[in-house]
Image 1 (spheres, rainbow, N blue to C red):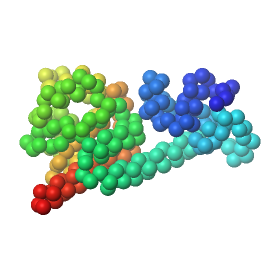
Image 2: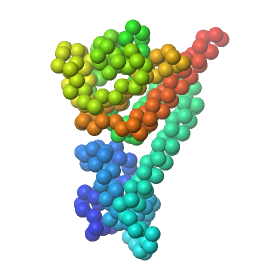
Image 3: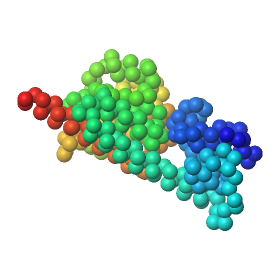
Image 4: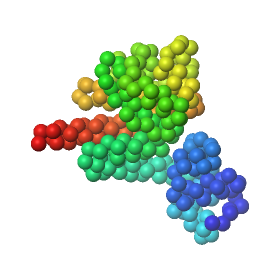
Length: 267
């Protein structure tokens, strides 16, 4: 690909990676920046190059110069709309792919859950995620994780099934059966106590912003779908809605696995 004089070296790197098919998370990991920073750069890139799609961007980087765009009167708006559309298409594709995987998995949660978490982390712009299964009496077990720091994973493995305080995010979620969205886990009073889960989450996991979504079958709590950011970047309402979709898909997968297991037992 050709270097474009309108772009800075960092913008050139991001443009080439994005045009080649990398997503925000992959680019961020490669360049050691936040996914939101990748998006900000892409909006600038689209505006500078006056492109309105990933295909246009790839063509431009491959030396296929486009003629002047008579309808690009507001480049900033055009770039934002273009990226928003591509993100919406990515969300739709991810949700369809997860449902396809669930249908083809024959109840194998080891195939389904990593895929759900992978798409959730990518589209929700989060560093790691955990699917907790609820064991009753405010007790949980981390059944599936992705991207989790080694120290936090070790704590969860050693803990097995563990109880949670009513003041933790999971504890509040159990009590209210509603989504708990914490802006900064270190800013809450419970962090200044000796609560083991909050210590593990913040100090071993490096989590700052956190959301826990109840996984419900009718009114029965079966688990918690949680995603974490390692910087203070609160989850927006739009991102929460997206995470709730993945939580619902996780419930479908769990129930599908249970039904298949019960069917095999009855034979």
